[in-house]
Image (cartoon, rainbow, N blue to C red):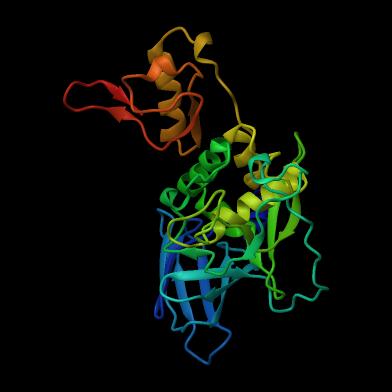
Length: 328
């Protein structure tokens, strides 16, 4: 059993990059694993790091914009190594690449359709797709990277935010840039034994008159929120943004990109507000994603700075030091 566990960990590494500049790469991974770095584009000195007990690492490796760095992750006592290829896209920006040995025919991307509000009277798109360029990631994966656009999928923005906060390595490992410029996104399907499913999309997006993405986007210009949304639209809605813009569950989004199951609780079924808070608090403190949805009755929230019929990502819980009242 232990050897199988190590082998699975080595082949599907938990590795999140937080910073990537011309001299260093740092991030988080499995405690006590070793990481070797090799610049495949230049003849520079290799880097090495051992992940500390808290899951953090930092290694020195010289690279410049455009260089590809190979990272090899190895479990203690294991001879197998997991390989990850990342390209330096500029200051603290990078893309995860398919292995250089990747060989395949260019993939024909299926047609994508906007939401109904962006179609004409004949049901044809009233807006056009335009190619968007930029790095996949800048300074890691953060909650603030995700912004909901003109689409009713707060659940998806919530799910992506929770992944960024609790499962950043899942976000980074879900997307690989292919040699033909497309992106291969890994999702999971199957209720009891979820299996990985690969979807190929490009960075052609629906833009407004100012050239900004109409749907989920990022204020930093990094592409990962838009790419994951587009892959989710292909996976769930067969290319239709309307299909993913009619509400949903943040748990379904997290499951789609991690294969992790989730539970739902109705507040009316709880014995008290304290019980609800305790359940949420235990979940978040254990490092598991949690979200909360509000009622559709707007009058409930007249004096509260939250929206009705909306889904929120819960990032932390605690008690106010002034009055000891619990907060989310």
